[in-house]
Structures are given as structure tokens and as C-alpha cells.
Length: 303
Image (cartoon, rainbow, N blue to C red; front, side, top):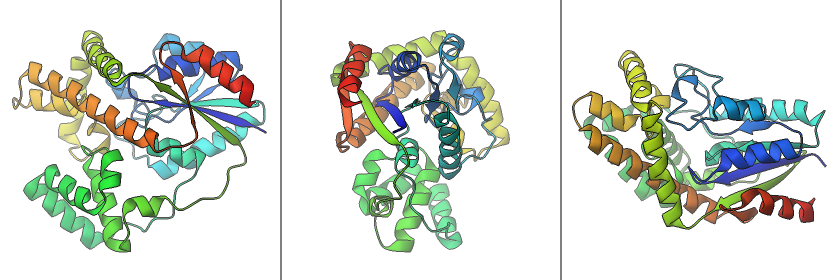
């Protein structure tokens, strides 16, 4: 059976390198399911694969969009499945990698049929957002669906608006709405997760933020800040690493404080990823110190 090997784990844990090593071993190609690496203007702040990494193995869905493009998770599911069908015509294995949990889920399990946006609900929530800020939306979702609150990007108002709207429409939590079983895929998925002690994860995140700044994150964020002023409602720009620097550019925060907030919010995102993956029962875990050899050993036994 055709096999999709999906590499998962927290931000900064080493997923890109493992994916490339596996792709080279199996002479195959890589699908990214990192929803922020889709955008070509956000290369540094999303830790997108470098030119050398892109040359080492062919990647799809990296830098293929502009931040001004609209691209939904449903569109990604459709495009990724179409691509997989084409790749599996020639290859027995394809690698997928990324830390956007819902995007991975969309490919390996499928999305549930959810109601269209309710105009009155959306307007009511938009008014709340404008009057009381994103914290009020976070509070509403936390009360309605504490489980989804632990997993969603709580800094993305569009995600919060959508989830609350669906809960209000259906009378069920968002978690219940998205947990119904979907049609089976015509390929097998093997999920490999990279794990490390939490202090190692946090240390890597802090070091990576420092490296991003050395690589030019400030200039990248300043360019995006100009775009944000022209397009203030772009969901793509509500991203850790940029949102904090925008407040520095607006003279709300000092640079040192903005950087400390990037590190803090990145660690919080890693914590949400850990919470999500801990509930998954079909992930084969490998140690961060030797992920490639351990992955090959597990795959040899499984395949």
C-alpha cells in the first residue's frame, strides 16, 4: 500500500531535517503542512526550509503563496490530496512535515462538513473583538470549549471567531464538530513524532528566535508591517514572531520586550502542540538526539 510518512512534533524540534533525511532515504518528496510556511514573505520568522534544504529534497507548499492570498484549510486538503495522488503514481512513499495540527489532520483524516459562517454571529463577534479585544474572544471560547482552546492558535482572531460561530450554530463544542469520523484515505499514514524533554524544547525555541533575529527577522517583519497597514485584517499576519514586532514598530513595546514575548508565545504554542499530540494514539515517537536512525528502525519493523 502507498504510504504517507508524516513527521510531527513541536516547533523547533528538528522536523525539517528528519523529513529531508527520510525523503532522501526513500528517494521521494516532501509536502509541508506548516500553514505559515506557505507564505513567501515570511521565510525567516516561520523557520521555512533554507535554499540548501529545499535543494536537498523537493518540497511542496513552501513559499507558494503571498500573505495577501486567501487560502483555506479546505483548499489545502484538496490540493494536498491531489498532489499525493500524482506522487503516489510514481512513488511508494511520500513525506509530510509540519506543526500545524489541523492541516495535518485535514490530509490524513479529512475535514468535517461545518456550517457556513453565520453573518449575525460574525458581526456580533467582530463587535466584541473591536470593543473588548482578542482576550474577550479567548475567554468566550475557553468557556464554551476548553479542549479546543488548548489546541487552537489563540492569537488568531479568525480561528476564534469561526469556532465560536460554529458552537453557537450547532449547540455542540467545536471539538465535537470536528471529531466525527471521515471517509478512509486510499493510502496508509505512518506518523513519526520527535520528542524531547520540555526544557530542551524551550531552550531550542529561545535559541532559534535569537538566530532568526541574526538572520534578519526585524527587516522581514518591518516589510510585513507595511503590508499590514494596507491590509489590516490579514489573518496570515496574526503570527507569533511578527505580531510582537508590530507592537515594537507601533512604539507600544521595546524591542527587548517584543523579543521576550516572541519566545514566550512560541513556548506557549509548543505547549499547545504537546497537548494535541499527547492525545493522539498512533504516533511513533523517536528521540530528538537520534531521530533518523530510530525512525528507520521503527519503519523497518512496520513496513
